[in-house]
Length: 141
Image (tube, rainbow, N blue to C red; front, top):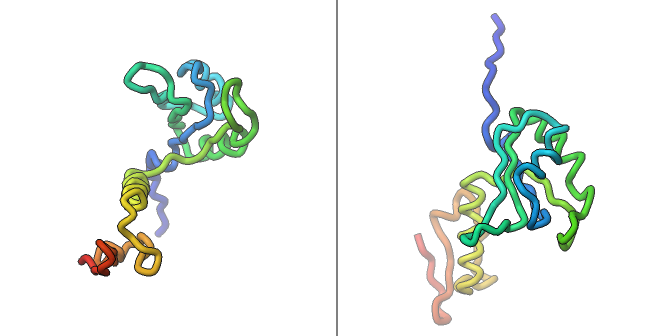
């Protein structure tokens, strides 16, 4: 017996983050840039509360291969007018990766971890994390 299970690719495998865009570029402009690589399911330019572009977007392709082709062709390939560096095209972070990055940033800003006690954020770091509060080392469980 042999069978192949066809699974629909997850959003993670198809969704791209696009950074270093010109802040005047619209969804239509982004679509024109990415359409040569495949079928686009979604395109969203990130905007602030004032409605102005933040210079980045998310593009979701219908397949992983299309997304991969866009990364290979466009990442670092050009500098958009008004952008400070070349175009960034990469797979978008998962919710878990985004949450982990935010926690790491908050911890770094608070300065509560000392280098001698800082444990890397790993699957086991939820069980113990050494911190220094007012010079006293404490292990949090």
